[in-house]
Length: 128
Image (cartoon, rainbow, N blue to C red; front, side):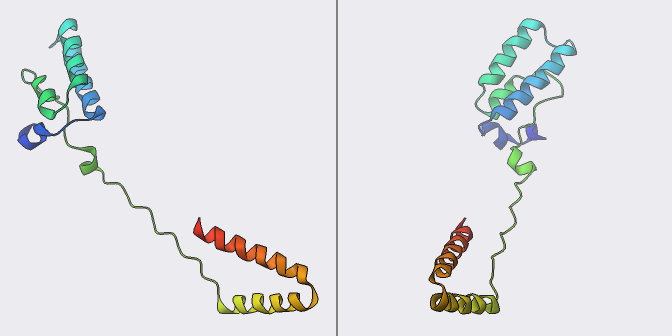
């Protein structure tokens, strides 16, 4: 448990640990271990806590539950996204495009502009 590891008490806490402490204090309030005034005071201190020790002081005279101070990153590592497959164009396709471009230059130059536009689109879409 986090209470047994003194190194965790020196670590700074985040909002998730603060809210876990407030939730645990709420359970103690419902169980009758804290009166309304003390519950409100301890919740205010929990929301202003900076370290695990600040939070654990609020639970020194209370039984379990206590907030879990283990960092969320250690309990659930972030999955790495799969690598994006690289697009490859077969040599035959490149050859066909080159032949069509050559024919376009000889017979219809406006087709060359169309092919250049398609080529630019393909190059730009590969970058994004």
